[in-house]
Length: 206
Image 1 (cartoon, rainbow, N blue to C red):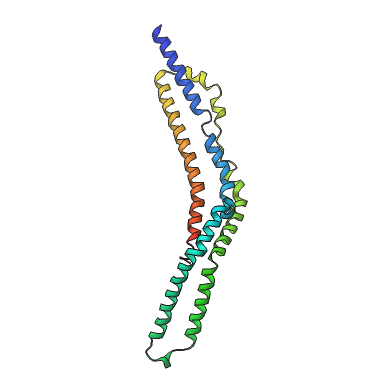
Image 2: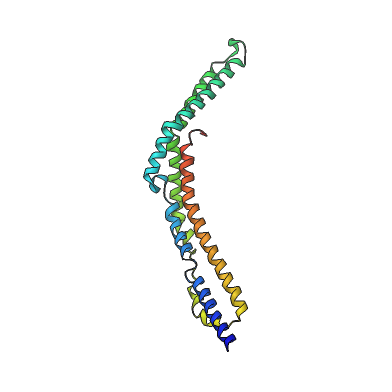
């Protein structure tokens, strides 16, 4: 009698634990997935205006002058190379200087408008993302409510050993779903931080 009572008690605990682990298992995942289209569909300016203004100021007042210095060094070295390629100035064609001036003007134009170019790319990407948002998240919701209906009664019919294994598996799946929700959060917000960092130093690679 004591053995049966203890077994039933453990079964009730394990069955209740399994149902509890499965109930709302993917709620956080579903919620984060539902926010994906809204989050990644925002431009850097729309995501956080204060950070955007700070990054823009940093790019224009700190990074852009550094890029200008690098550009000046590169173009000066190229001009010196053009002049020293031939030791006789009579052999130099004047067109090479016009080419050099044209290249310099184009480089200066691109570097000084880097911020506008980068933001234009994101505006175009937002348009594409907005059109694909419904396709991406329409069927991503995971619903386990249909599985948990009448589950506890079926679990009580199982042996104690399989119940322990099933409880451990449901606990592991719950931890995994929690980790997936955290990963989605990190990817969404980490992406925008990466965008801000990349946009701030964009004049240098340009």
